[in-house]
Amino acid sequence: MLEAELYRRLKDLKPVTVIVIGDVILDEYLGGDIRRISPEAPVGVLDCAHEDLKLGGAANVAANFKKLHCAVHLIGVTGNDADAARLKALIRSKGISPDGLVSSSDRPTIKKTRVMAQRQQLVRIDREVRAAIPAETELKVLAHFKKVLPKSDGVVISDYHKGLLTDGVLKEIIRLARRAKKPVVVDPKGDSFAKYAGADFITPNRLELEKAAGMKCPDKARIERAARSLIRRHSLGAVLATLSADGMSLFEKGGNGTFLPTVAREVFDVTGAGDTVVAVFTAAHLGGFLPEEAARLANHAGGLQVAHLGAEGVGLEEIKHSLAGEAGISESKVVDLKTAAQLAETLRKKNKKIVFTNGCFDLIHYGHIQYLQKARRLGDRLFLGLNSDSSVRRLKGPSRPVLHEHDRAHILAALDCVDQVILFSEPTPLKLIKAIKPHVLVKGGDYAVDQIVGHNEVQRWGGEVKTVKYIEGNSTSGIITKIMRTHKGSE
Image (cartoon, rainbow, N blue to C red; front, side, top):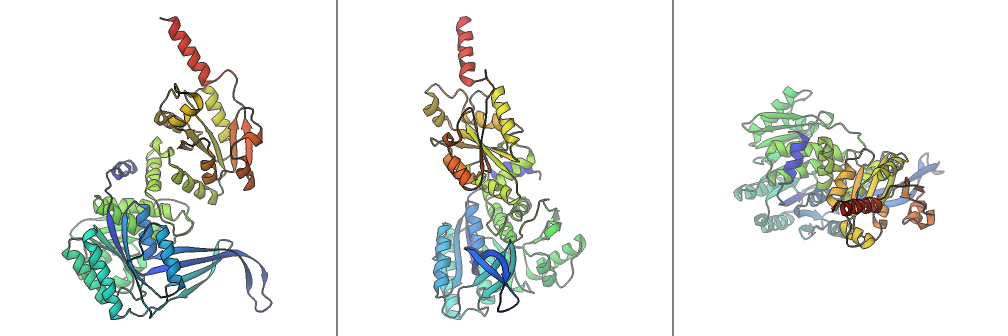
């Protein structure tokens, strides 16, 4: 399926509600610089500059679903400790209820601390108990599952082998879901997939596939043999295997197999790519896509995720934008503020210089094009804030704009010198500037730097503020006056 067809199919994607059940993890990142050696031992001393908490495990899978506009019921186990409170607060901040998290006194909340310096991980510290949860905790977990199952479209089992998903819990989850005719997607762990018997889809990576099948999978033939062996042995509906640089493969029970090549991108961090694939595949399949269509969309999203730093997930808008761009659809350049900020962040990580300008651009003329070309030459990407129709009316009067905001945005997007167009209705583009954080802020005309909206903010983070003069004799007002004069003379 071509990117253009996937892009069009996204418009038909139905919103769904998903149960995510599995091991919830609190990820802690300690970051800074190492510039000296400890006098106590031959080790570096980290000058810790920042501490970040992020969702991990099944909690990150649930957050991925929220970015895809899905409703989520998250079920898991935490300890009775301060980290449980931190984890629940973080879950709430993503718009997810923590009511499905069962507290258990026999274990701490799972926490992984990563110590980072110069964007490199130095050490990981795990705090966890991997023993099976006690029987009374199993009953509470299953009670939550039974309560939300009728309200859901499907189930994702996110297994990190931390003790929650015992054989008994897994068997009952799959039995109840099958009886309710709710598809089950499993992100597996362990050397055997027998405990997932009866699941509709299972999503191993290459190593997990090899271990579960008991055979090496260096080529397509053996990957297919391993997948079909697992489908037959454990009554699975399909195996969707992620194969790193070799892309993905999908083999359905009684159906043909498909190999999907990897989307060529610069890889920054593979963290969370599997969670993204599971969430996008499930959301797409439950939302109306055929399994192969859902797999292709998930493969594309996985490629986007590895170009990010950290397991932040990929939003529906970013996927749509990327598909449109690769299909050559000009709409890919017209984005909302959230998507623009995400794109700008990715560009900064790639050391690309971002230029920002703004304006009404009504009746686009040669002077506009010359100005935008000059602005684009000041950096690697040009982000353009475009006044909405209501904003133009406030600035120019009730007779303006001549062209609708949709037309103005797509005319500008068709220019090679413009990389992104973001509509805004506020009196000034300050909100856009703060979100995009450009390296260069450009304004046309004879403005003094201190008269340009956003100059303080841009200079504060080390950026530049520049002015580019318009070509004299070119103005929208002048064109409108000339048209009206000509029209009157012809009456």
